[in-house]
Amino acid sequence: MAPRLGLFLIWAGVPVFLQLHPVNGAISSAPAFLLDEPLPDVYDLPETPTTTPSYTIAGAQGPPCAFPFTYKRRIYYKCTSVNSEREWCSLDEDYVGRWKICSDGDRPKCHFPFIYRDKRYFRCTTEGSAFGLAWCSLTEYFEREYAWQYCDRY
Image 1 (cartoon, rainbow, N blue to C red):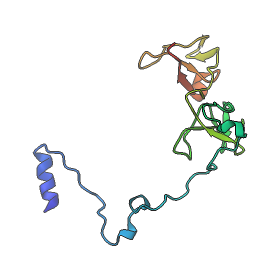
Image 2 (spheres, rainbow, N blue to C red; image 1 turned 90 degrees about the vertical axis):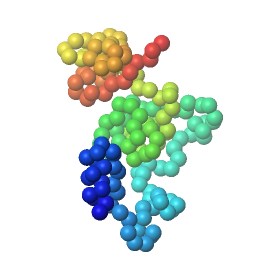
Image 3 (cartoon, one colour; image 1 turned 30 degrees about the vertical axis):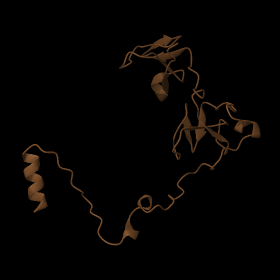
Image 4 (cartoon, rainbow, N blue to C red; image 1 turned 180 degrees about the horizontal axis):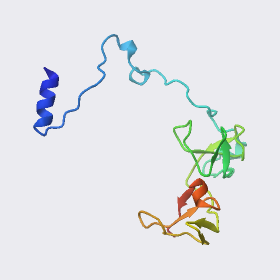
């Protein structure tokens, strides 16, 4: 009866949200996040950054991110949220367990000059920007890695 009613409501222009996988059975088969149980540990990163004690001082920026850095054989040109709920960066060019949560000050530097569409740029550009915002490449040749960021508006 429910599928016919749902089809009628869709035909009548009323949006219908159907539950495709109903939960039948004991509550123990529900996902952990519905049972107030802790989520399984799925992160490869340590729980706290491995840095010097001065890093933890309130308001301190801490050591700088090492851009670009390699994590699990992939190069990152800016902070990433891989294996984490928050963006982080490595403190070493090759990740060896030292990392920190990124803040607003942890931005990679633009690579000047950079080449985009066979033209050399010595400052941020709006060329090719869908929203007209200035951007820069984080590598010498933009088309190789497509690593970029928006430039500061100041």
